Amino acid sequence: VPLLDWAQATCNKVHGHTLVWRSQAPQASFREDYATHKPLVSREVMLARMESYIQQVLTWTAENYPGVIVSWDVVNEAVGDGADQYKVNDLRHVRTMRNGQANPFYEYVGEDYVELSFLYARDVVEALGADIKLFYNDYNAIYDGKRSGIKQLLRSINSYAKDENGENRILVDGMG
Image (cartoon, rainbow, N blue to C red; front, side, top):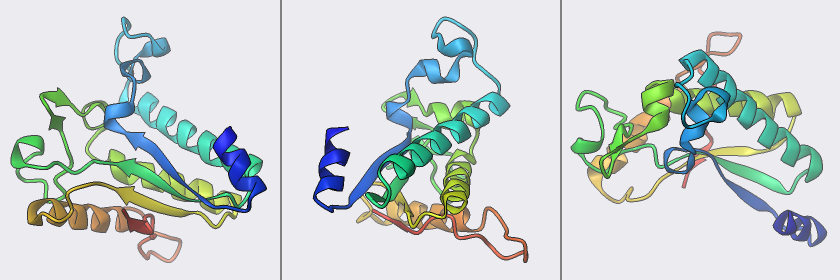
């Protein structure tokens, strides 16, 4: 991994981009045996795949490049740009469609895929004892509707899981 080798050798820090992104997930990821001609897997299988992928990437990079990757975009571009891209009653505006194509994470994993992605990532970071910040990433946050959806999504992520004292776990550290 040339970039990470260079960053490690020169004491530079890296921001990782991205663990979960609807437009970059191959359709085979959602299918039995990872084969596009096979049936879709269940939500439970997809959750296990998501969790395993996030765990493997974060663990491998933290172990092989300790202190180099200091932050990650956990989920990228999950908020829709307009009402035709999300369910009207979803204040988070989580994207169900874009350019006529369904969001496979929303469709096959469920409407809480963003929150679960952050929960999995936070669990790994805490288990590693690593100082890695977790971010949500999107564009067009200058527009009121998009910004409103992002703010609601961030609130939802940070109220999704409770700690041992019943307090909200902070799963997302920021957005970019």
